[in-house]
Image (cartoon, rainbow, N blue to C red; front, side, top):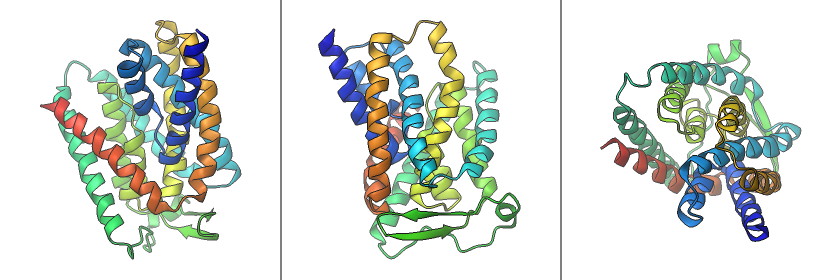
Length: 277
């Protein structure tokens, strides 16, 4: 039992660091480890994954809020589309064929990974938007943050609000219909479609995932999918890891975060595409 607890704490620290840096919940890291390496039933691995997402969000959001990296107005605005999509997906369960969604979102993730590779190869390109989007100005979505890696304040403008909302609605739809997390889609909606810098995109994604996961945690708790001897040490490790990860992320150059993010996107996209066929 002590060995299992220590192992869960170590896995939690690793997942918390990776989740906080990349804006992913950590479930994509924890679920394969628990099922493939620890031979845990997928039902309990998913239950632990929900706890992981909440713990990662809680641990990292405190640091991001303190350092004013995340964009609270963008998070709350996009969460509307995600929630509507998730409810729609839950209602459409059994009507829509899930394989079409797997193919569609698999292709979107692969496209996004290639788009990020293109940005990496073009070292002089900047993701920052210079357009004055009237809708973003009206909603006061434009913001700024202090980049500790570059030692300077970066002002940024948000654009293509309908595009970001569409991706978030689709992410919520996929979550409700397929039971998958949508951390990767949240980062894509902000970084690729709304032209936000990668660091505020990742930080904002962390906050949004915690809100979404908290809504479903009650269901997993009452149907017995959350095992305390797995979830509690995992949560403790993740709180430590997410706090460390949020500090590391702010000092990492955005280029290195993107280099870490591309293989994760490619892996998720390829798996979704394979499931669709």
